[in-house]
Image 1 (cartoon, rainbow, N blue to C red):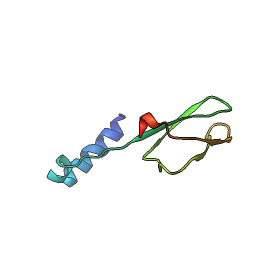
Image 2: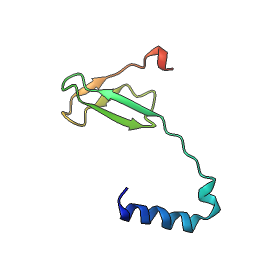
Image 3: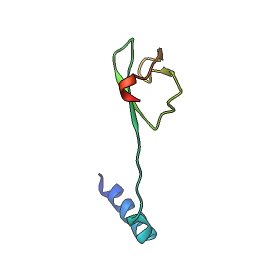
Image 4: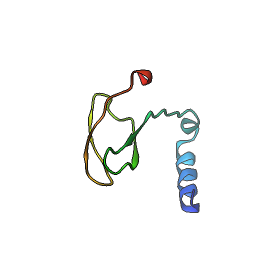
Length: 71
């Protein structure tokens, strides 16, 4: 983290006080590999029902299915 970023985090903690100590967040990451360019990307808390995703690298429309082992 950059010194500026660390300062921002410290400022937020000071402003939030005890509330920040009780804060917790869980994020489920979804990893995708483009069928055309083979590059990968990640989306946090992606909607599970969404099946069509566009590659941020090459723009190809990709159709994905969730693997049963990951449900």
